[in-house]
Length: 545
View 1 (cartoon, one colour):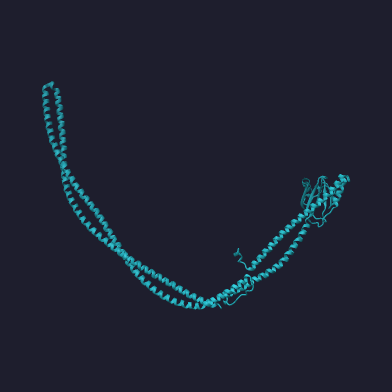
View 2 (tube, helix red, strand yellow):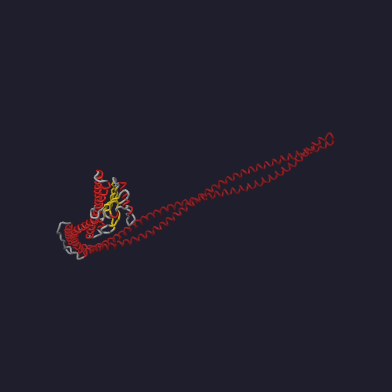
């Protein structure tokens, strides 16, 4: 809220306060006028109700006369109706009396309506307020209504307040009312009084507002002009403001005078310091430039050394890489040679095993040849037995033939024996052929085994020679691998030392670069300090003390 108000001048804020006060006064006056209007309406209703109460008291007096026998009821009603018809109040106030048959018995405004029916009374808009109020008054004893009707004096249609009271003893309903023009006239008088009072109050308030605004803004404008002269004009610190009074503005003027005095003393003290600072800044600028040139020279030399060390480091890394590759290759060859040695050893062992198996096979083959020879001898015996059996069977057949019928059965047996001997001889011949084939195969196998054994012996000898050669190669490869490992270690150590040198050179280069940048920063700072000292000298020279 304060930030929003600071957007406006003091005069505008005072005007805003005055406008808000005026709006509040108008709102209060409007509320008061509204209350006055409500009170006037209420008083008018009370006046109407009081008039009806008086008329009902008069009717009650006449009814009592009829009850007491002083008058007949008809005479009493006629006398009361006549009196009501002639009664007036407030200039235009009159009464209307209507019986239970809706017949008008008295009409103070228009006597011609007497004796007519209330149904005939209608307004221009077609409504009948009398019938409306009759129904309500007969039910509740009282009825009120506000409706527009022409004023008999001004002939202007305006609102009228009407009230009806029911008198049940005679069945009469008494009407009366009042026009709102009286209320509006009274209200207009109240409004005029309010306007006069507000005008009489506003004039001195506005005059006081102008004086108050001048008392605040005039010294403030003097302070503003003085500050603008100091900041944008000649910078005269000797001018002073009037400090008369005890308000905040006077305190502000007093504080401004103290501020101007203090600033003047400070400027007077700083002016010689500004000249001295300018001279020192120039000397510092020269020293920084010399230091910057030396640092740049060191930085360039260090960069050249760093480049050479980087080249040596690159060469060392390449040597270390090549040495490591050679060591890896030697290790790989060593591993492959070891694998070859293992294969050769396996070959020697397999060859020895093969020779042993061939020797065992040769022994078995020889035994097989011997067994086949023995089988041939046995077959010769069987063959000779079969030949002898055949001869015996032939002799038996001959003898059986000689014996005639008695030797017939023996002849049959002899034939069977001879046939069996022939088959045995045939089988023996076939077995002999097979045995011959086996013996030929055994001889071939024995010959092949002999050749294979010879070749296996030669292979075994060559494998042993290869194993011995591979062992020698392994020893040489192991020696080469050890040499490569030592060379790689030495190269790695050289690389580490070179990297350490390179890091130190890089650190030196970075430090020199930082020094160069620091010198550049110092140079800029010195230049800035020189500019500041010159600006300060110029600025301080603008003030008058």
